[in-house]
Each structure stands twice: as structure tokens, then as C-alpha cells.
Length: 188
Image (cartoon, helix red, strand yellow):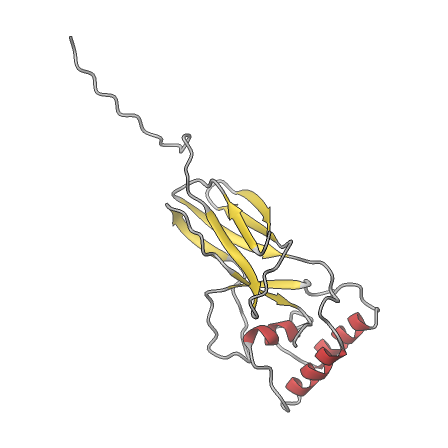
């Protein structure tokens, strides 16, 4: 007889994995966002996977372990959702320093032209949207998605903000990759 020792290794991860990447997308007021498209970018193989949020959650299962990933979200529909002339009034009070916006997310929502600040130009752009001159904003998406772990030193100046979650060398499930959704133009 003879003794043989066999060492089987999965160097190319052909056997798969049970690891998952997941998270939630919600507003500052904890309202779950439906139908946001979430993209998972495998940085090693330059491949992409997509998921749509259901009840504000997304899931990528299975994933390749020991790989770097980037997660981003988008939703570019219904620009007028939640937008009214009251938003114009609130933005004008902020610009005139009568009553400043009280959260970084509201400040982001007021940056209609995506310039990294709030000015009278943002009022003009939002007014054009409300009046139907614009069907969509020429320089911004309807929604922006911010890494929920980001903190702001100054809520009146949240720029630049992080819209991509980077995961380095994922070797186990990562289930709390959350985004805060910001509806552009809806500051109230």
C-alpha cells in the first residue's frame, strides 16, 4: 500500500463563496427609497453587477472574496417629486442668511446646479423646473446618494461628499453599506 496526500486549493475562487454585500438606502428622515439602481464594481476584474432597491434594501449574492469593490447608487426619475415653491422660499432665506438650512443633506438638496455651493443661480434653475421650462435639471441628477458613514465638520458646507462606498479586500459578508438619499430641490 502507499499513502497519498492530496491538497486541493481554489486559487481562482472557482468554488465560489457564500459572502454577500448588502445595504439600505434611506432619506435623512429614515424613509426607504424604492427603485434606486445600485452598482457593484469589482475592481479586480473590472466587472459590474446591478440591483434595484426593494423596500429600500439591496443585496449582491454571492460575491468573489478577497476582492476590492466600489458601490454606488443612482435614481434619475421624477425631478418634481417633493419640489414646490416652498423650497424656493426656504432656499432664498438660506442664501440671505435669514434662516439657514439645518442639515448637510438639505444643503446638498439646495445645490440645484451641482456647483458645490448655494447661490441665486440655484433659485433660477429650480424655478425653471417648477415652471416646466426644464423637465430635468441640466447639471444634476434627481437624487444623490451619500455614504451614510460620512460625517460633516460644517453642515453648511458639506462639499465634497462621498457618493461611492469603497470596500478593500472583502473576505466576509458586509451587510451595512448604507446610503443617505438626497432629493435635489426638496429642502423641506
